[in-house]
Amino acid sequence: MFEKKNKLLFQELSYKKRNYLETASKQERKEMFEYAKGYMQFLDDAKTEREACDVAVRMAQEAGFTEYAFGDPLAAGDKKYFVNRGKSVVVFRVGTKNIEEDGLRVIASHIDAPRIDIKQNPLYEEGGMAFFKTHYYGGIKKYQWTAIPLALHGVVILKDGTKVTLKVGEGADDPVFYINDLLPHLGGDQMAAKANKVIEGEQLNVLVGSCPDSEDVSDKIKFTVLSILHEKYGMTEEDFLSAELSVVPAYGARDVGFDRCLIGAYGHDDRVCAYPALTAVLANESEHTVLAMLVDKEEIGSEGTTGIQCKVYEDLMEEISLALGANFRKVRAHSKCLSSDVTAAYDPNFAAVYEKMNSAMLSCGTAMCKFTGARGKSGSNDANAEFVGEVRRMFAEEGVVWQTAELGKVDAGGGGTVAKFVANLNIDTVDLGVPVISMHAPWEVISKADLYSNYKAFIAFMK
Ligand code: MN
Ligand code: MN
Image 1 (tube, rainbow, N blue to C red):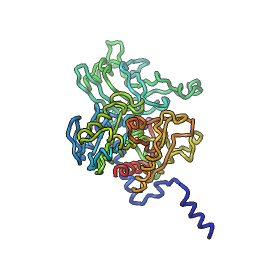
Image 2 (cartoon, helix red, strand yellow):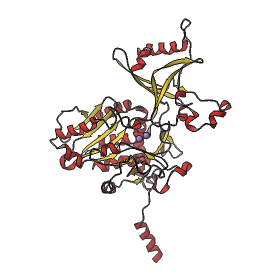
Image 3 (cartoon, helix red, strand yellow):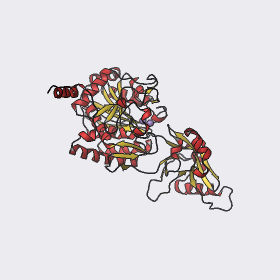
Image 4 (cartoon, rainbow, N blue to C red):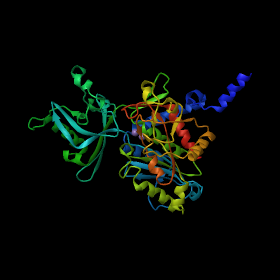
């Protein structure tokens, strides 16, 4: 009897992570799977920040949101979206509460993902093949991008200023592109090299053609490629100078595992947070003024006009405050932000770099990182315990299954998010996002349960 009592008491006193799949009702599991379908469609439709921005705008319009420009009047109940240069979008709802006292509720995520960008003067032929020179974008393991089908996405600004959009390799009949690797038979030296030298940056050349269609020019294959580009897009070689082209994996999102609880796809980081942020704001009314920020350039330091360090996002919040007759400093002081980015899921195949007690476990829900950074939390927004406590109470009230996480073992490495930049505005901010297996690989894996938990967490944050 005494033993049984202590067992119950221990259960009450101790903390244990829960697997969301294990605890979810049949109905909730059905909702998870249904929600995942919409997300997988989003993944396939939006592989670059420009495409994600376009799709988000379309979804916002379908939900009755209209475009906002600085200076526009705003009133409670307004549903708006603000586009920054076609590569970033903020979707927001004006609530009924006074924002001077209540602040803004911001969910900040990013829609750029690691990839291979095409150089400004890319095209050459050699050895019976034509290639594009490239420069990779974000933190990748270069060797992972060889010998897989690739699709070409982006825009070209022609000489006369016309913008041409390219998307080749996604349709069933489209050709795809390819980065060559070395056959193992001749790969002795390569296999002995350090992994970051196995394929070097200047070897990431994309195979784009092989047919010598003409007799009277020197570079026959290059000529073929240029002819096709000219015919299809009105391009000349000089137009590459003002182009933004990238290659990304050509394959789509798929269920992973016999039980279909996981999703494999390119670019879960960070669309697995951007999509829930977007859909939470589109589909749910709130008495708070809520913003879903889908920003660009996180993978290269959040710089530039479309990265979150750009003043445009602060300007937008200030404009919202002005339009509602509120003092922006007071608004900021009372605002709250979930910096929504992915974290590493514990992987038993690489257990040495994780500290299991404090790692995000797959399917145990969206993961809160009180701090990120490297070494002694360097470069981290270390959220206040008070704010963490507040968010914890929000989640408890709505029954959100969630967990806490650190990226890996102390001193094993590190990383950062947009959190610190938002926090610099005097906005309480904490990181919250989905655990990922093989983060930054051309094909990453996440759990449908964690995706849905992330969505539920955002709804709780908006309540
Ligand atoms: Mn990220
Ligand atoms: Mn990343």
